[in-house]
Image (cartoon, rainbow over all chains, first blue to last red):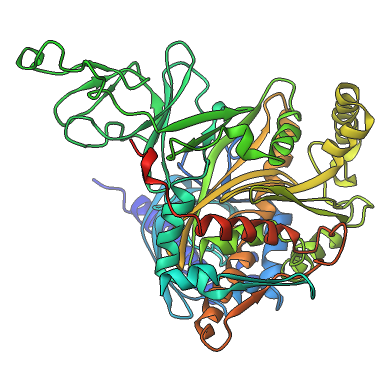
Length: 167
Length: 427
């Protein structure tokens, strides 16, 4: 017989992760940089590889490979009036789905995989960003935080447009 | 219409030091067609770097001026550039982006070729005459011209093109300066950044060697460097712009950012200082102090006409781009580094590269925005038909933030666009 308590715990963990990812998506779409940054743990990796999903970012070129300082600078820059590529800002709407908890412990966190579809409208140009995300989440007290976020673009080996919003 | 308009693409008034470029050059379809025939089909164009296919049997595929090309290294180590089309019925023979193979096989009918393009076999060989390939026309064709300068491989689709070193003119010295940064050989650091810009390709040529826009367009990047303690050396921007002949040009200047070869910044710490100073000292040992300092401390933005950019700045990027329409280009960019560089230096190099460069960097996206805004502004061209690139024209030695580089490009562009193709040499 299935252990109902373990099913319930699994459901609760999935719900917590799902709510976290939805919240993250909303803050990113709204360009709420402070709110989005608050979802991160102190030490972090924010990575968008180029060409393939399994490159070594220390040896090969990525599109984005940020530590905390670089990410804070990125968000600060986007918040000024002089990040010309975001004047006007992109209008964003994203869907996050196919959420899978991989190697995940509700008490400590772990790795979560999901798929995303982001519509970007800037002036009269509509761009679709499609791909897979891998989050490494950690539980700090009652809160979930992102320790790592890896974004694997469908177009990682084809030409992309400016990636100047939070993906 | 076309005949008259090709003449009136630039206006130069030497008495008043004025240099104007017609905005029509950036928007007209017939200009793009003239460029394809008179520039991209005739100039030497960058194919790739020898370090990208280091082992016998290595190959990669790339599109150069609209032609799919195979860049390969044969079993004896010689490099080849082949037109990626089966001599039999036309299919692209090599479909992978890169790899290693003993031979290439066209999957359509199974013809097989060596890495130098020579036909090795075809199914049903007995159905052909014994001397079927007597003239080699069943081999994969090489590009008409293929030459390598210090590991930089170029192709030309013009059989009558001058030799590569002759074409490179004063730009060859700058490839030397880059190649000399390594005692073993420079390598393309794995990976390509590829991005699209809704703007005419020549806007990126101009922008890549434009020392004038940095202080405004990239104010946030420079402020960002200034804001963090230890990010900058105590070196003000200063330097020169040069016309290198044949449309090639460079800006060469001192800048405050850190250079892995070799300008230390406090952020890199004492260990970093030892390493960077060691690299600098070794350059002075090999080339004398003057040239050693020049290689190590100067930054350089180099244009090799028409569309190869090598920017040796806080990292080194090699960038090429092609138009798919008058208002659309596709850009490919690579990082290049000394192969013997330490893991530490390579990490910092990539960190600096991504900070500034590429679609997710702190600077490139703003350049993209600037070029796209130019392209939009050109919609006013009937009433506002001219760009101005006169800055520094009256000066004996133009500064790095003058516009002599653009004038070098446009003067050569104008001469070439007005030279009809010589069809007699076509094979």
